[in-house]
Length: 201
Length: 365
Image 1 (cartoon, each protein chain N blue to C red):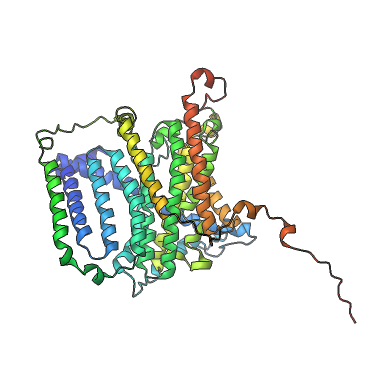
Image 2 (cartoon, each protein chain N blue to C red):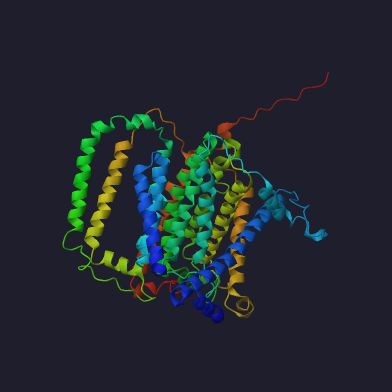
């Protein structure tokens, strides 16, 4: 075992342990934080594969933005654990069925003929001047430009749909218009009254 | 150096020896960056108190001195503050979540220090010269928010939680504008490596710096940086007049100081990034004799100090923004400006050479 193996195994151990923690821990805040740990250790594994752009993008997008919003929501929920555990056995068969289907799908992919250790080419180490980001950008905007644009449009549609679902026009909403606020002049707000000073008796 | 490396190889074997040797040298280099940084943080607090005091026609800290030297009065203040903070008890509230309460300050300071790994101080002085340096910085600074959210939640207090919520929403919104401003920089430099970005600004004078063609982006980046670090006038996360001290209400002693250290080292980081991305990093303002004699990292430090002065100046000048105004500035003003600038920049870069030569753009593109 050399140094790289040591790093690989420690990252993998943390990844598996935290991923198990995500689904077994009772407190949802802990569960979200463990998912963050899982993402970060996964990014570490990708760095070992010299996929630095993907690794940093994973941290930037999932850890930096998505999980922050997740935590934001989870922390504001008032979760009653007893209520959550109610009806566990009633829904167990359904959940087990879904889990079986998922396991079946994953094993179909992983056991397929594309995924054996023999079919995969051994990843070769790249030179120091090899730029992962540039290569990825070149591929995305030349070879895979249509799938990329399609995915972008899909995301945009999903975003518009989410906003349309939650947008409500309320009549009694009070809103401020900063440009009007800035344009207020002295004459609009105050009136200076000239009063003769009182005389001493 | 070679002798030490050989010693390592003898003790631990060739493979582990070289690994442990690089680990040790990296640790030494990390200390060489972090210790001056923390000293800088200590004296930034002193500079802040002094500068704001003079702006408000006061004197500021003027008592603590070293060895009774009269003209050093006040300069011992940060050390005295640090000693006081270390001696104080860390009170953990009964209702608080103990693990997360302790973890929160650690999670705040970790990314604030880790981001310094890729900052180039001069062409050779950089700890890790990675290709995706700018992305790494963005990833690290976006992780800083966890400490704040966890601190707010773990304190189990309404004020702390309100502060954490405010801070989370603010940081996530300003990160977008910041990211788009950085996209403009990397479009100009065509590289994510911070050293290459500085080299892209090399030329006869400061006219070559990205400050000139990207001036609106410089402003957007600087203001977003102030918002990201939760500094005045965007310090609603602390908002001492509304929610006492925001997310760190319940912290005391060293745990509180760690939050402080993280905030100030983030300030220095934003100032350093602004200098590197827009003000030419280690490059002198004019490439002639008296300026080029001064070593590069001195120029970088001068630029960082210049930007930090703005941070302090803003704090002394502007009243605190209202929360909806902060959100409006981030989403409705900064993001449209940056998007328009990206499109404009792309158009200029794609102009045919014959048209571009007619405009005085050749020193940048």
